Every structure is written in structure tokens, then in C-alpha cells.
Image 1: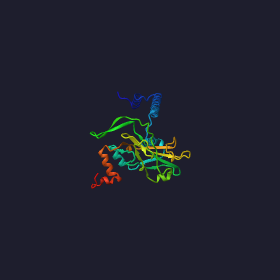
Image 2: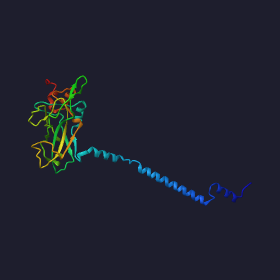
Image 3: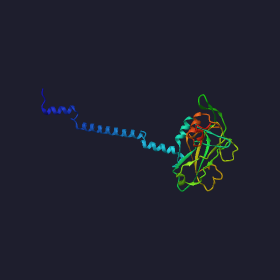
Image 4: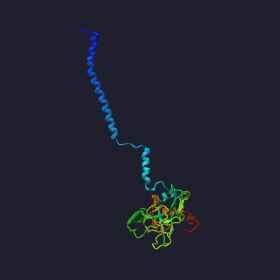
Length: 269
């Protein structure tokens, strides 16, 4: 039986749940509360999630950590490519009773000093570890031969001859320690750096703020404060009385300007 248009409209409203206005309001209220609850839950989850750093923030954090106690002062190793070539095959430095100069020599460029303050710049050479080494020819590499005791030798501090000098002057030049000599003479009285043969060492560069209470030019030693120290992995070396690795011998002859006579094919080596 066909319904009238008025009856049909009424039946549709009943089926859709719209016939009772109170029910419609209750349904709308429930939907609003559900939406607010979802929003609050989402905000809570966002507040509990770990904060993500941008690439720039991460880089800044790493830079601050790497800088450590050195503040704004930067020390760059000069001739680092040559040092790396030696380091790849195992750098050796000859030590003698009379003293032998290092090649390559330690040369650095400094940035970030206070232009008007006075600084001493010095170098010393300290053990990398407490091991003694020997060279194994069939494998062409250095091997640990046992333990050693470095306590009997206090590291000597070699003060750069231009010390003390203003920060402005230091930053204008390349600071070279090419006059440093290495010796195995424990009784040396010439200021050479005393080392033991067949041990691994690394040079360290020290930047020291001048303090009127201490005259470091007369008694070169590291003060308890006002010192910043820098070292470079590629400058580590093993001390020898004669070169063990033939590749080191060849590279020293090829690159050392004082070895010109060894490069002359007409001269009896």
C-alpha cells in the first residue's frame, strides 16, 4: 500500500534517527567529546615523543664536543699530506747520541689567539703507549716486543725560540719546530728531546699564556694552568737507530731537501 508523501517523510526521519531532537543533540555531543578526546591524546603523544634535532643542531653539538678545552684556538698541521704518506707505511725517526733532526718536521698554523696577549709556544714528545717494538721483516710491520718503563725519562719541553710573542705575531706566521733534535743520550745537556729506541711516540704542541709569575724561557716546563695542548695522529712515529722499513728510507731520500746527495745517481751511496 502506497504511503502519502507526508507519511513517507516521517518514516525516513525515524529510520535515520532524526525523529527525536533530543537524541540528535545527544549524538552531536558525543561526537564533539570524541573529537576533543582524540585531539588531547594526540597532543599528549607529541609531548612525550623525543625531540628530533635538525642537521644543523647536531653539527653544532658535535663541534662543541670536539673543541673540548681548546676554546676558540685552532692549530692546523702544515704539510699534513706528507705526514699522512709516512704514517700509512709507519713513520720512523732516527735518534742518535749527538741528536738528529726530525723529518718531516712539525710545522703548525695557529688561529684564534688574543692578538694583544703574550704566548709561549712549545713542543714535547711523549710515549704513545708503554710497549717496546721490533720490526718483522718478512711481514714488513712493527710488532710488540714487550713492555717498557718510561718513568725514568721526564719528557723535555722545547720552547720555540720566538717565545714569548703576541698572539697577533704568532698568527701571522707558520710556526716551525725544524730545529728540534732527538737523542737517545739520557745524559744530554744540550736541550735535545730524549727518547728510547724502538718505542712509539707522538709530538704535542702547547700554547701557554704568559704569566708574570713564571719565566718559562729560563725553566721550560708546563705550568699547571693556562696551557692548551694539541696533537695529531699522523705525526706518531717509531724511534730507531737505523731505518728498518726500506719504503721509509726511500720516501725520506725523495722528500727530504737535505738528502740531495743521496738522490744524485753519480754519487756512491
